[in-house]
Image (cartoon, rainbow, N blue to C red):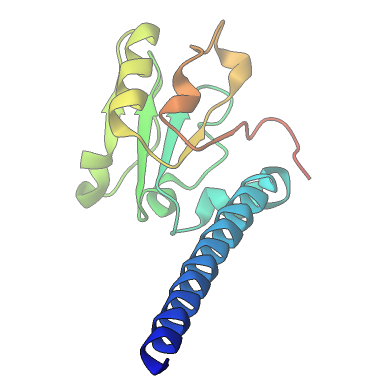
Length: 147
């Protein structure tokens, strides 16, 4: 009788712990999805936040909007569109700048880097490839007021 009761107790504890772990996983998944939905409110924070890896596509619209020495201090990369130059950059940050000679060469660089956040002025491009959201988690346009 005691042996049977112990087996039943073990099964109840086992099933309960599996249900608890499953519930915690579902809860954390839902929390992550809710945080991703608040992109508009946090867009200004993301641009200078250090916890996100960022990829800036520097075009005429946004080249004067940022202090590039400050932006590139974090986990960020600047991709320069054709015929674009940014001001004086510290020597130790120049490795974070990718210069593209053709507009079409920007997209493979973005795909290869696989950063968390892509900051791009969508008005400066005819078309953004459909598969870009597969390679970045968040796409922000700093020329649009998101507040």
